[in-house]
Length: 170
Image (tube, rainbow, N blue to C red; front, side, top):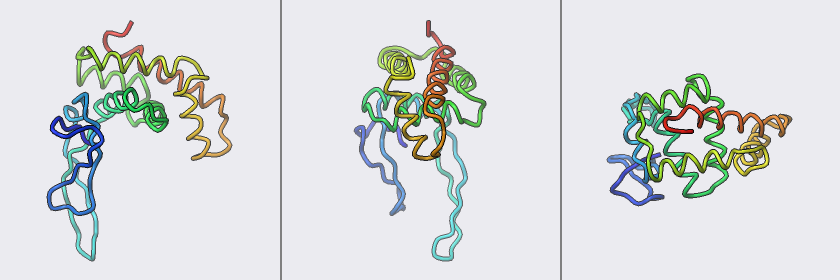
């Protein structure tokens, strides 16, 4: 994912001296670009070991960019990704994710970002909403046998907890 202000949303972003690696620009909020750090990556290609450093977006920037994308695109995958990351992140769940958002960005949530956050809450307001439906549908494909009602409920609880702990949410 990229968050470049000089490329349109949805544009494929190519990297210098790289033929097969790219990203899709989710331009719009700027949060992903403000929450990144270099991460080493290694690969063995054609018998040659390569090591590069790639700027990777942190959890806070990823979530805010994904929430903006969900608001703008209305794709099931975005709803699924948000719920999955809130439930299964390495930081400790939705409250921890909200704490990272607060720590990284403070109260910088006005205009379109506030609208996208409110839209997220509305799309996970109850188990029959489109967010929980998308999450449960994809999880059922990935891990058959899981209880759909429980999956829907888990996603509603996760988004409510995140929303309740993000700054300036009442």
